[in-house]
Structures are given as C-alpha cells and as structure tokens.
Length: 152
Image 1 (cartoon, one colour):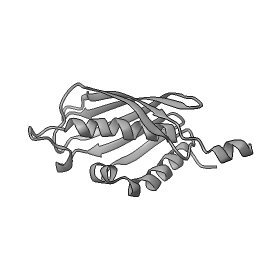
Image 2 (tube, helix red, strand yellow; image 1 turned 90 degrees about the vertical axis):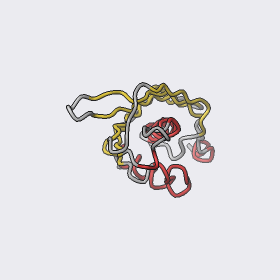
Image 3 (cartoon, helix red, strand yellow; image 1 turned 30 degrees about the vertical axis):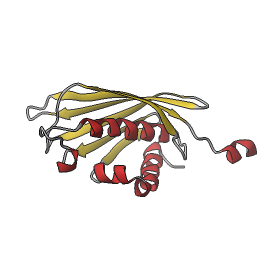
C-alpha cells in the first residue's frame, strides 16, 4: 500500500512533463511531506521567479497555489485532481532570489465533484523567523474516473 507522500510524488512525476509552466517554475521544488489532505514542499526562489523589482512575481505565487492545491487533493489517492474553477491569492510580503519558500497545501474538503484547498506560502528569515509571503484558496472540479466508479 502506498503512502500519501508516495501518491503525491507519483502524481507530480506524472503531470510534470505535460505542464511546461510547472516545469519552468518548479524544476527545483521538493515535496518533503504528505499525509492525507496535507502536503509540504520547498522551493528555492531563483531567477525564473523574480519580477522587475527583484521580488517574487505574483504569477509564481498564484501558480504555487494552483500546484499545491492539486497536490493536496492528490494526497487523497485520486489519479486526477481536476480543473481549477476558482483561485484567490492574497499577497502579504515579498520574497527575493535566494529565499526558500515553504509551501503548505491543505484540503478543506474533497466532495463528489469539487475540492476546496488552502495554501500558505512562507519564508524563513536569517534570524529564523517565519513570515507569510502569500496565502490562497483554490477550488477544483474533480475529474473522477467514471469507468472505475461504475465498476464498483
């Protein structure tokens, strides 16, 4: 029997080649923890993540919310995590190149057709204090395998 971490890492390896934007932004992401309904990952902020002002680009934060919400849903053992129907991102503070983002995705609910998630993106400063960079919510329409459902 596979663990939620195995399921999430397997799902990530399966979708990464099919998503050029994920490959571009998340080549260095590391999923280091998963249990049913929760994932944690780390991402070093690199040159592909920075805006013209030298800080984390808002589109990267939004893409992290999309990615981490899907990974949290995958921790429920689903082969497909669905299509985004709604994403909200609140930008709280900046991150710069060299910072390491701590990403936590949590499932609020996985229903028959919809999955609801929350994502926190934080960084740890040089003095060891953690600060929130962005928070988000993500709703997905879940693509269920209709053949598997009708067979059970």
